[in-house]
Image (cartoon, rainbow, N blue to C red):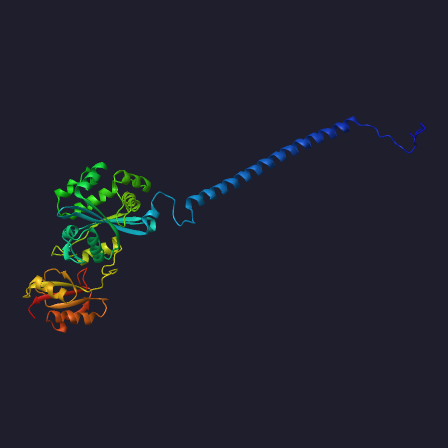
Length: 388
């Protein structure tokens, strides 16, 4: 229709189809619901993806915090920092007024997952103690003191000790009682008197030392706190945290089967290490290198006397010391032994040193040779089987 009210012939009115309009609304409604379902599915999927990503990120962050690769160590309560080194060896010495009752090496090694060692030291073992000559471990503890005894034993074994936890028997017994007793030889709640009941028995010393270490908590913090409550104080080279790190480490290793225990064997003299038996313990258990790491490079001369030597032990000692060497009491010469001078393989100027020692005892240079069959703790072995 035009503006004046007349019909516009060019316009065509379209008929209204009610059914068609209803179909369109229904389709729109169906499409709307389908779209909503799709949108919801997409939203749920996105939320699941986001949640999974968040879980992965949180797991990575937690793993890094636990691992802490920038520190180079675990955050577990092992006291690794207090230990001070990958491998630490200390001496445990229990003494009375006469000398050492029990001496043992306690070593903690944190490498390769961790391991420990407890090695008993015989009280009759001879040591070359600076300023005192040859003393047994028992006598060195009372006569020379724990520091010089530690140095002498460390030199003999080639093991660098960080310090000595030196206690009187009464103090040690008090600690054992406050720990509620220790397990010795499978017997729980044993006290320290077992040492007095078996004097000189290195197997008992070994078991007591292992039981003592095993009585402490396996956690470093708990052991450090316990030592403080027991009144343990810092010592030379052995601050309480380091002692706690060693003890808690040994306490962890035993149940895991990573604690090795042994006694240092002696030869037939009862005063010198048996090379064949002691060498695997020293090098394998303790990582020692006999003869290495000594600050005093003066040659150590071990003298073994036979019944036909015609020379007293005191005279042999005087000759060695007078010539400027260190004297080591060697095992008694075998009945079929012959005069000999053996210089340890690897010793500097071995043949020259051997010739000088031979001349000291009026022996010909023909008896001098270089070899490995020298007593541990000596550089030269002299056998005087008969008068030259």
